[in-house]
Every structure is written in C-alpha cells, then in structure tokens.
Length: 485
Image (cartoon, rainbow, N blue to C red; front, side, top):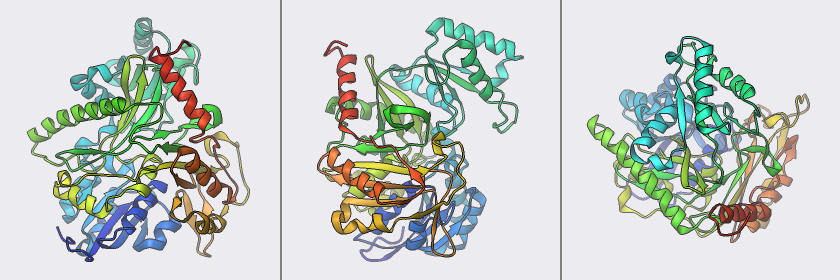
C-alpha cells in the first residue's frame, strides 16, 4: 500500500448514494495525517461531493462496469476505494475492480454480500445462533407448481405460528416490499395478496417470480449495530436507533429512514451494557461462521468494510436479528462519522491491510441526532407535487457561526444545477446532524438546521424526542417483567 507517510497524498474513490456518502467523505476530508484527494462516483451531482472531489463522475444507475472503467482510468492515483450503497456491492463491485485494476475496495466481495438474500441470512443464523432467529419459513418459487399449492403451504404455516407475521421478499427492496400484520394487512386474504404481489413479481433475474419469507412478528425495541472489519476481526461502533416509518408516532409506510439517534454511551438509553455485549457476541458468532467458510474458499478478507450492519429486536425472549446488511447504514453511519475520534483514512488503510487489531476504534462521548428533510411526495406525504424543487441551504450553513462543528449538513438526493442552484430529487434530500452532550441537545441542534432549510420539503419532528425514548424504556421494562403493563 502507498500513502503511509504523514502528509502524503492519498487518492480515495468513493462510490456514493445519499447523505451517507457525504458523511463518509466529510470524515475522510478531516484527516490530519493525510492529504486526501477524492474521486467520487455519484448517482447525481451532489453539491457536497462535487465541492470536495478532485474528479466527480455521475453514473445514475451505479453500473459496476462503468464504475470500474472510471477507477481503471485513475488507478495510478487511487490508493483504495469505499463503496457506500448496497447495489454495487451485491453486483460484485469489489471483485470486478480488484481483479481488473488492482485497486483495493473497502466492502465485502459479492460472495459475502449477506444482504443479497434474506433466506440465506436466516439459514446462516440458524447454523450458528438459532436463538436469535424468529420462527420463519422460506417459500421458494421453484417448489410450487401452482398458486393454489403455495397458498395451501402459506395457510399451513400460519396455522402453526399464527397470523401475526411479517412477509418479506428474499431480495433487497429497500424495506418497501415488507408487509406487517396489523399495518399492511389484517386478514389472511390480505396477507396473501401481499405475498402474491412479491411471489409473482418480475423483479427476479429469471423474471419468473421471487422467493418469499414469512416470519413471526416480533414485539420489542429495535437497535442498529455496525462494525468495521478487516476480514480478520470486527470492531464494533456505537448502537443507533433508526426511524423507518414516514410520519411521527411511527405511522405511515416504511422508508429508507427518516432519521436516527445515538447516545453518549455505546448502547441506547432503553438498553444496558449487557444488551450491547450480547449484540457483539451474536455478531462475532456469525462472523466466525462466515470466516470458516472464507478459509475454505481461499478468501481471507472477503468481509472487509462494514459487512455487519445488523437490525436487532430486543424482545421478552432475548435479542433477535431482523436482518443483516453488508454496508454502512443510512442514516445510522451518519450518527457515527462526525464523532469518530480515529482518523478514518488510517482506519481504511488498516482494513485493507488487515491490521485493524492494532488500534482501538473510539468515538467522542457525545450524543448525535440525524433528521432528514424529504421531498413532498416521499412516503406518500403528498400524492403529487408539481411545484418548485429548488433548495437553499445557505441559512442552514449560516448556523455554523452559532453551533460550529456541532451541526453538520449532508445533502443526499439533491442535484447541483448548471446555474449553481440546488434541486431536490425523488429520495431523501438532505439531513442535518446535531451533536451534543445529551440526546435532547443534539435533537434541538438538528431541528434548528432543518428549520433553516429553504425548500418544499418535510420531515419528522420527533427523532430522538424524550417522550419517544421514555416510551421505549417503559416497553423494555414491561417486556422484561420489571413493571406491570
């Protein structure tokens, strides 16, 4: 590897999608050890990334061959690459780039992109941590001759575990293909309508339909776990809490995430140090199981990057795993990057070199709150919006004089226009990150930033609100039998 001397230029390619990548780029640019030169592959002209990139290219579909061509053309000045979104990881961006260009990528190989199949995840967890699995059944499309056959099988499984279940597509659907009893359907017929919409979809590579999972619906409180990995060991990052539902009071459809919070500690207010240790032990078991498979295939570092972004559900029966993703969380990694004490460039070198064990990953003892501002149609807030999509962040940036580095603003689904103006696109437009000694302080800073944004956008107001956290704390006490319901 090059670029190990302090102050030497380090070329880094970042594959970007959303505010998550902007937060990573911001952390890279804060390096005090290295002179960072950024080469950014983006879905659009994100204004934050354009301003900081030595070279910036737009590939709207993040096609891995086109990305590889860009890296190949600049490989003499690139030391390593980071892939933030899941789509190129699942498509094998690391395998292709490393084979064709020699540039080392910080993300899992295609074989170990665990989020490519929810069914494979369940089978893996069953092998090494069965107690963390909900009851589940995978309905493989190839196993049934007719829709009547699969309906009988679904009915039979519901007879075993009850109607309160979750229906999921096997392949990633950004959380939007998931159906939940009581939210998306309230009868078996409605449930099966949802099941059939996935089972008969043409989104699979064969065009003949998709496998579907049915799992027991878990009651509890959710946490998000992330960890850096060099292929040999994992180093856990603080827990965060994501808000998937579109509207306040946790109503509306699932989204990519409307915001999230992190406490001062490595665990969340409704959890304990012991809960956090249990999360780490479970991820270690899964990591070790995959490591054994890696050794058998001659891959010693296939799990490089953030291969374990795990959604945990803490229930009366202990901690369960909702799903595992193979990339940094959006928005959850945005909570971490601004308060990471380590030099991120050094951490990346160590992940590539397999020397992560040589340092301790640390974050400042601060709380952070991320709030997203989103377009009018996002999450069904409006059925249609045909008005002006200009967004002005100048007043929000002006708050820097008041809050200094305790307020960060990361554009996401936002396009820099030729005239210098910025327009919101179809997904989450921009997020603000508040940093404080307490969650409530961080929340107020984040919301101040949101209020200062000029544009036709909307947001949830209760991300990290004290009443929401207190409700989670009461619920965990109830589940653990500490108080009466």
